[in-house]
Image (cartoon, rainbow, N blue to C red; front, side):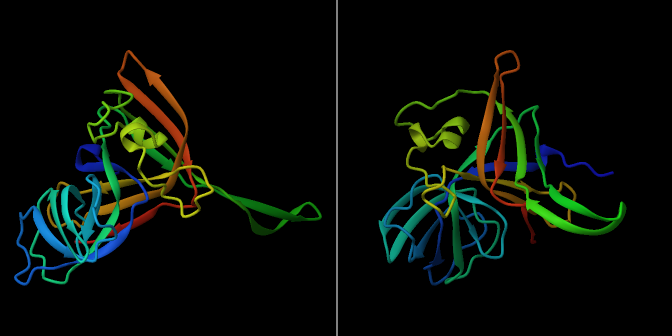
Amino acid sequence: MARIDLKNATIRILDGYTGTADVNNGPGYIAGDTAMVINNAPAADVPAGVAFTVVGSNLVHTVVTSTGGPPNTGLTFTPGLSGVVANGADIVFIGRSLEVNIGEGNLTYSEKRELLYELNRGALDSVREGDEQPVEVSMDFVWEFITAVTGSGTPTIEDALKNRGEASTWESSSADPCEPYAVDIMVEYVPPCGGVDPEVITLPDFRYESLDHNFTDAQISCQGKCNTVEAAVTRSS
């Protein structure tokens, strides 16, 4: 049975900052470029830390700086482009991004459904679906610090989960402003063998329910649920 080695996976926490834009540069850009000009960004100043993808690629880039404003916004980002990007190519913003350092820990998620078995005079007769069940998520990540230094611009994982400190301006991934704050968890798995398409697994609208802190192992165990019945999974070259 094949095993997924988390060394080949990048796990990110994303807020609800979303929107689209398009590349505005006649010659386009080449692989390795770490700066571009875009049209029609969703905000005059794209916040540092916002993640985006170029349509047709699963590679996730993170904004380092943003200058100007609509209609033309200049971005610097990391990592560099994976290939040629033409003028007019679509850009999709997928939220402020924070990479999770799993270390020796793990991430698991469970999809469940309730099935009700109807009887007819004591014998099995028919089956129907019961109530929907949320996806359950558990992850163990490295305990570096619980909260970030004020003004550093980079939140800790716990800051991102709690919408506080350096993540106090993060937007909830939930479309309902009356619901408790939520984030998306994204797992990008790139198989180490060549010629195999990568896979992106998104666990949307995650809310933590417990955070267990282990001083000895320098690890935090997080459990919670997503407001969805299954993960969103995509594959592309």
